[in-house]
Amino acid sequence: MKTKLLIFISLFLGQAAHADIYMSVDENGRKTYTNFPKKGAKKLNLDPPSTIAAPKPRAPTATPPGFPRVDGETQKQRDGTRRDILEQELATERNLLDEAKKALAEGEATRLGGERNYQKYLDRIQSLKDNISLHEKNVEALNKELAGVR
Image 1 (cartoon, rainbow, N blue to C red):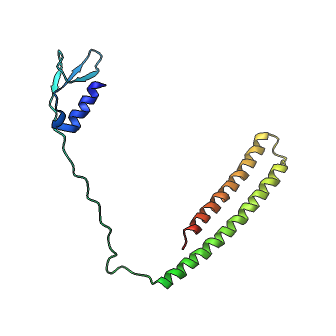
Image 2: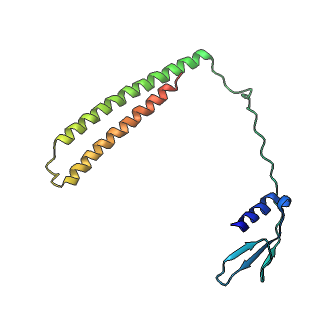
Image 3: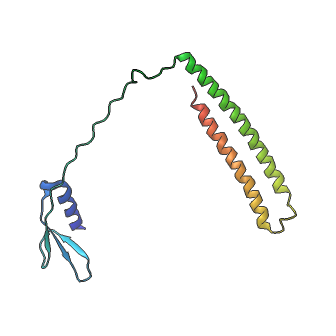
């Protein structure tokens, strides 16, 4: 552990912690790195680490001169249209969720003739539960989307 720390320091701190590093290979082929020479160890010739300048933060760019602009009233109309569409989709999704819940309640209450095997019944019920989960996620996503509309 001590040698790994010394390697790290010598590699990344360069001359402030410069030390000679030696590598030896034992009879099992394992490499060992140390800061003192052993019999049969090779001295490694390590280049000092290179420094890379951190990238400069970019300044926010202004809108290009030819970029199309929308006046405030047009944007309000677009936002209103978007809100109306999302509210319609939300109402539709809530209706589908209610229908899926009713289908699950009916499905759990009845067992079909081809479902002598209990697993077939469980598989059918699971698909109904998955359908409910899908509609619940859609309702949640639409509510999030509506919260972000101005």
